[in-house]
Image (cartoon, rainbow, N blue to C red; front, side, top):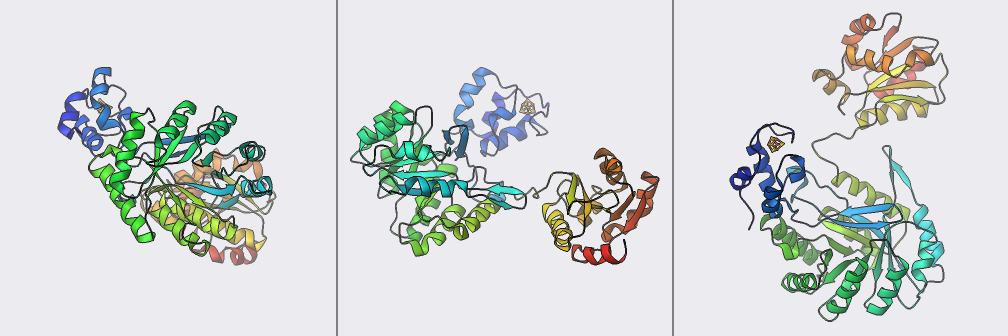
Length: 439
Ligand code: SF4
């Protein structure tokens, strides 16, 4: 039975030292009871209390980790139903299903493995491969020769799974899937190889029964296939399982889920995968390797799994656009990613060279940062000095965003010897400004 906030508080040091980022131990205890923080955030809990708090500290949805050759994918460990309540933490893994018997297996895997796309400064790719073991005992070796990404092994032949897992020693692999007829043999294989075992059943009740049987056989790391005849049924089950795990701390369903997006035909694959990403899947398996489908899925996933309370930021620094020369202008902006990309894209598209200094404005846009005191003359001057801009340029001239024209006098005072110009308010007007005013 989960402990209340007050019960947890009694087990904490009660010194209110604030090292956990909360003002009091009671505030921390309340968050711990609500599964919104981890016990490890408090460094002073005694070993005795840790034992007693173990259940409260355990994530309601178990953290599952797939590892292979230095790459790792973590799923689960989620604590809220809706991202606006806090955030979703571990993005669902996107896996491509391939057949062991496919004569082009290596070629297909290599092509998908090489897929990489950049989105607002982040590199996206798929996370791994789900191999359907249909009679080719060398499939895992073939796949391993062209990718280092984590694997899911699909099959119900315990001997074939055992043999394949032996070829993947040292990795953490997911086996799909145990049901009521084979859970004992597959659990034994999973236990032997320290693999993760997916379990499937026709109802949530049967699934909860099965996870307890598998656990009793010594397997702790599991993934759930919720079944369901259509998208609506899967959504209902996914929501119910998540709610039971989070709200009722119902451990038999406290595991990440796996979803096969092509189960109802390839034409609906993108729609099914999208729903699975937004509604709690831990692993999404697709059958089609098509960049035009994978890219929007990865972007959707990124947007669902970013912290809604933290703006997406780019690294503060000095960025070179169109190979700037010492006499190229120095533009200044904030590190809110949309602001950065608006400015960078306009200048890059114009073909005009420039130095772009991105200040640390805690991820806020220009006007918001200025209003919050995060984008002022002092910070701008600190960035110009800190990034050694003076060493790169022969013409000491900076351009402020038009929205903060009011800062120009103060910036001149902070940066003696620099010419301070006020640029346009909108990034779209930068190319014309650079051509007509700066030259
Ligand atoms: S770090 Fe621990 S002792 Fe300090 S305030 Fe937080 S809960 Fe209390």
